[in-house]
Image 1 (cartoon, rainbow, N blue to C red):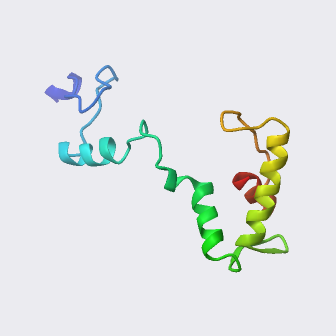
Image 2 (image 1 turned 90 degrees about the horizontal axis):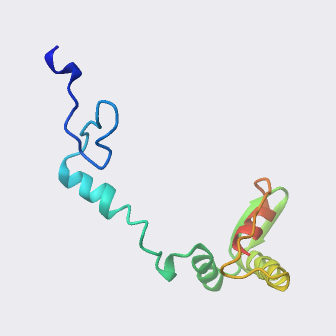
Length: 117
């Protein structure tokens, strides 16, 4: 094969990769999928933050079951109360918007509280 040793035409920013990248998307598909849908440099809109969406759901359906597992069944209102209580304790310990708080929990209702708090 004559072309086996030639570098393929690059489709993106990784021209220096051995053998070069292979084009698997049309330019239009690349633009739509990689560039437009992967706009990770843009901050998420406030309405898309997980805790804000949860708070909205809790306000809309406070008595609906939000979480079941490990022998627990909590409504949105109960889960929201527990998350707010934990958030208050963390703030009291110095946590805030720019402070990283690590979570190390198994999948459990407590993990959901910690993620939302």
